[in-house]
Length: 226
Image 1 (cartoon, rainbow, N blue to C red):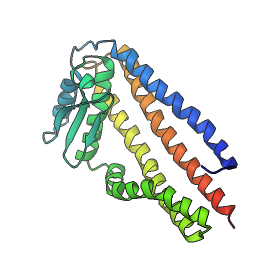
Image 2 (image 1 turned 30 degrees about the horizontal axis):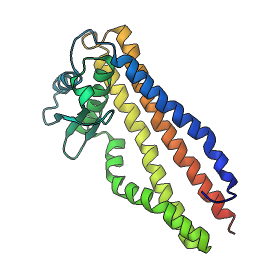
Image 3 (image 1 turned 90 degrees about the vertical axis):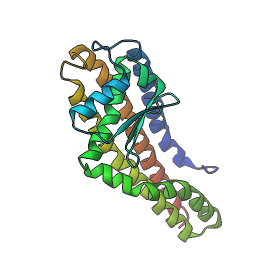
Image 4 (image 1 turned 30 degrees about the vertical axis):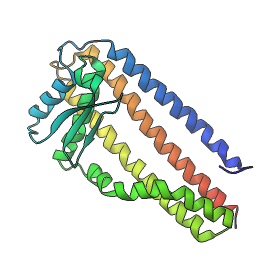
């Protein structure tokens, strides 16, 4: 970030974790994307089945482009599944689809952490975009107020990462419950589903740790200006 900034070393272990997590996600996804589920259903069909089973009738499932671009849009009540997940009958596809429907279930049941995350999205967006520029300007101009403002904004971004963790872990937990019934996936296939979703959860942990370390760096650098 700055010439002679020794705090950069704090990022090294977190970056290693992040790269490893990403490789685990891609590796597990590819591995279990080659294995068809015993029920012979696509990701879209699995998503629809889980929605019906839980009495959720106002959520739409639609196909979107890209790879691993799957997500739930709470405002529109849409489960967006990437083309490969939407049409594939693999263990990976069904697992990812179930996870995204897990978010729809959270929304339908008023899961508090999800509601909190949705409410702070605008703040998090502003914080993530404005924190570093403000801190940089304050650092080079030696303006404590701007540095402090940058730190507080980044703390807001970290809060978003922290609240995201229970939301994502809970969505996977809901997915496991829906999948582990002998109809969608058998016991052997469930191990594959857990490998796929647990690896994805690790990326959120890595992102949160990265944000935490970045905040610590800003605080240390701020202290060097006193």
